[in-house]
Amino acid sequence: MQEALPVLLTGTSGNNLNILGLEIPMPFEIEKWQIHEIFLMDSITYALAFIIIFFIKYKPLENKIVDVGSVFDRLSQGINFLKSNYLLFIFGLCSYMIFTFLIVEMFILVPNYVSNYLLEGGNVFASSEVYYSIGAVISGISIRKLFDKKNPVFGVIVMMIATILSCFILIFTKNVFAFYFVSFIIGISNAGTRILRITYLFSHIPNHIIGRVGSVFNCMSVIIRTVLISIFTMKFFSQGDTIKWGYLIGIILLTIALIPLIRNYKKLVNLKATS
Image (tube, rainbow, N blue to C red; front, top):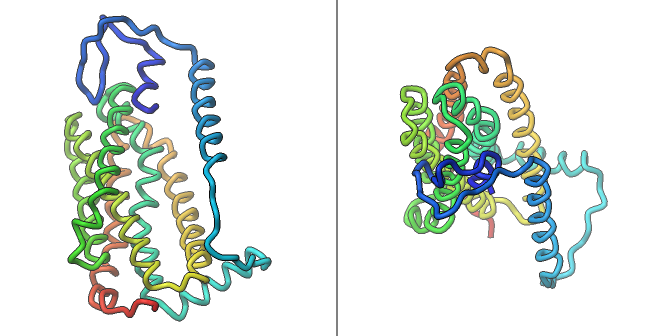
């Protein structure tokens, strides 16, 4: 849908279709759609997805006890657990920073980066989303095998370093294909980090508390994202090529998160898993 959107908005020009940054000749012309027609098609796809999910049969393996406690009580349980397991707090929060920054980067930085820094249009933005998706799919398939002989903490550190280096590339180049390459790498690192992170946390946090701990990390992530969005939507970042400095802020944030992981690497690797 992301790649199709610019085509539907503008149509094709001279029977040429831009896919992944490449001009592909078409045997026919595609007329541009009205915005309400695109929204209608988008809503139809969501409706179809809802119908498919609705008819998926699900049978629980065991009867679960429903927790009727308040949201505050559940958060308190998660906070108390993390207080007595500070290494898990360090890993959970620091490894979450890559997702926290990249979710803001995708929706706030990238559009301005493409239009104001690369001086390109919607086709470049959509193509970058496709490259990101390809990287995420490849990561989902291969990341566990790639770091099978290493601890997940090692994989998270590698993915964070790759993201930091990718942000440096975006600051110092205006090459569209370099931007595509970085989008591909970020797709790998973001999805890979989330898989490795969840693998580690699930093996070190008991099942009955994992949801509460996850809620604590999610709340902290939302707060940090709100701060980043407030910063990146300032007028300064919408003028000229100043959006590149948003990536410098991302580099600083990820570096700060990376340092505790490296310093506590041996402790995290040797941390006893739950039975």
